[in-house]
Length: 110
Image 1: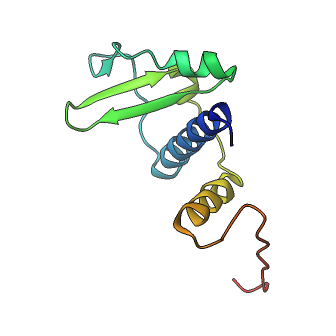
Image 2: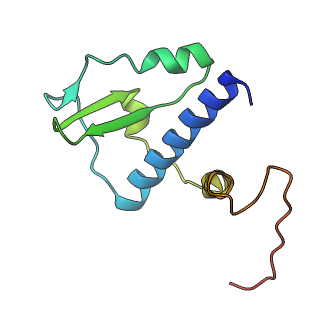
């Protein structure tokens, strides 16, 4: 996987995870107040990769939020099949499946 592809994948996973977390927990919308730190340029990564997206990161140690694209962060999105991506990456990383060519079958059991 190329460096650009890996970066895009990491950003995608992060965005999906945050959207899912915000959707599931019904996290309150964050307004641009004193808790939002403006010193980190998160837009650069999106611009360099040529993608539209948003991100919201909470720095627990400093009790600050870092965000890019605040209006998109406050919009709810249905996560749909995005868990398949995250679960597949976790399975690859932990060795549950051996490579990206592995075929997993489903026995129709829930």
